[in-house]
Image (cartoon, rainbow, N blue to C red; front, side):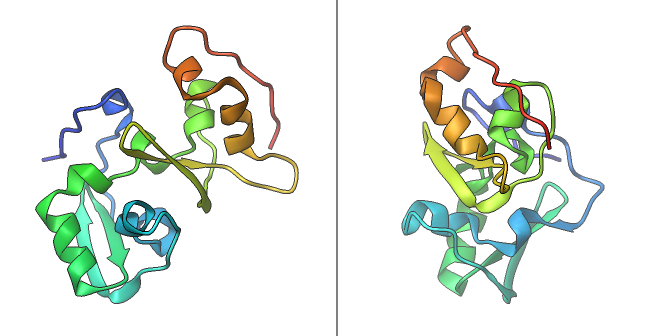
Length: 139
């Protein structure tokens, strides 16, 4: 059964119970919160949630995640936060992220588009306050 996330991003989590993909490209979801950095996890420290496999940098991180996964799961099911606001699903660069209202939000980052920069142009509240400004991007 999928985890229920109680936040303004709740409606954005997908039921991924039938997949077993490596989440966040192998980056540890706990590191984003504990050290404010994207750190690659290690295959020997893994845990599953919602049909995805998460990797961690240590046994301690794995334990943190297992005790409260809803704190560490990425918003929008791990897809690009900006993409979600424009009704599209963009791939993410796990090193391009922001913590918003205690939730990990990941963003697209290519040579042509930095979706985090687009998100930041309006501020976090603009995306959820009913006045979303859509900046057209092509990928």
